Image 1 (cartoon, one colour):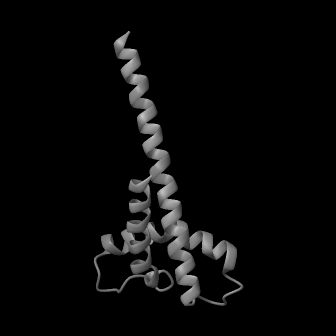
Image 2: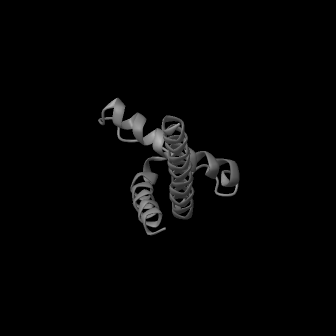
Length: 101
């Protein structure tokens, strides 16, 4: 449980740092790969925020909107990482039991 909390805190920190690039994107002088990586990383939280609050907060996220994006984004990525870890462990066990037969 501590490991997943630590992972969530790292994702939350990264999301909080990058959330300011949600509305206007990364600076134009950044390489395209970095701009794409930031947009991809922020997509889950940003899409959830837009679906829930876009009209309530007007044309773009305020400070509260950026906090919401960071929280949503880190939680979605944590759930995705947890799900992938569970599936990988399940597949490993399945392969181990088949090879033991």
